[in-house]
Length: 141
Image 1 (tube, rainbow, N blue to C red):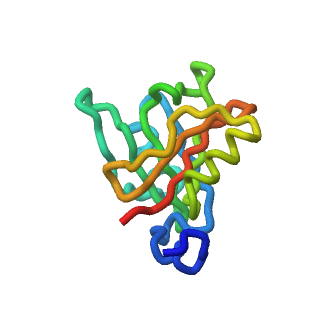
Image 2 (cartoon, rainbow, N blue to C red):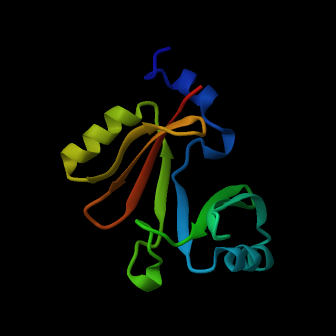
């Protein structure tokens, strides 16, 4: 498969992630945040994954037709109250390895090299010079 052919890549990217930079907010009290977003904005919980300690590692909610990822604050995502970034930014791309190298060459700090994850994606994590965390993903089969 030609990973640079956008028509082929689009078929693999989950519909809710296409054409978007998906914010991933880290908060102290993610379960309470989900409850608040449901009451305030009509959000619906899509799924949640909890750690052994019961904290939310990763959850997704839908606000109208938009996806918001969130979880309890943890390194490298400290909460904004603790001086961490306000959000991480998830982007599905055709070539995670190539874009990771490009970002590092431009001055991004590599936090996690491109790695095949247990879910169907190859992922890297970077911090831009302004303190924002970027999570780059390419779908895998």
